[in-house]
Length: 232
Ligand code: SF4
Image 1: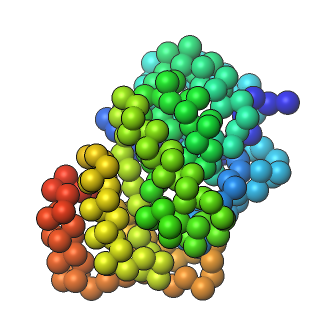
Image 2: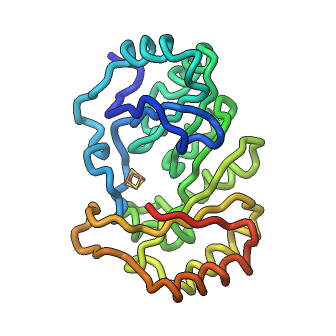
C-alpha cells in the first residue's frame, strides 16, 4: 500500500507557499463537507489514487534544483495515516514542508507540526458556527483546538477564512476578526468566495457591491491592520 493517497499534483506553483517555488500534493479524502467546498472529487477517501508515492518521489528527485518546498494540501492531509512518515521522507530529500489544513485531527496536527515549515490554516468561522458550514458535529471544536496548537508552535502560518455571504454575515465576520486578534493571530486573510460551483447547490454566486466591499475591508482593517483579502 502507498504511503499516501494522492488525488492529484500541481507540479509547479508560486502561490501555494510564500516566496518559494513549490509543488502541491492533493491528498485524497476529507471528513468534512463544507457547503462551499469546490474540491468534491477529493472528498471521498475511498476514491482510487491518481498518483503513486513512488512516482512522486521520483518526480521530486528530478526537480531538486528547481523546487524549494512541497505543500501537502487536499482534501484534508491530516486524514492520511502515514503523514508523518511521508513528510519525513520528503524533508530528507531537502525540501521545505508546507501544509494546507483545517485541523480536522488535532492529534495528528500536533504530531506533524515539528516537521512543517509553513501552514496555511483554514479557520472556518467562530467555533460555535463551524459545524453548520462543515455539516459535521464537533468540527468547530477541532478547528479551534488545532488553531490554538498552531499559535503555540513556532511555525509560520497564514490563517484564512472563506467568506460566503449565505453562510456568514458582516457582524459575525467582525466578531471573528476581533477574536482572531485577541488570540494573537497576526497573519489573517479573508478570502471572498467567487466560485459558482460548490458542494451545496443551494449556494449562489456570492458577491457584494464594490463600494460596500471597500467599506467592509476598511472596517476590518480597523480591527486588524495587517489583515489581507483575496478572492477565490
Ligand atoms: S475542509 Fe471543507 S473545504 Fe476543505 S476539502 Fe474538506 S470539505 Fe472541502
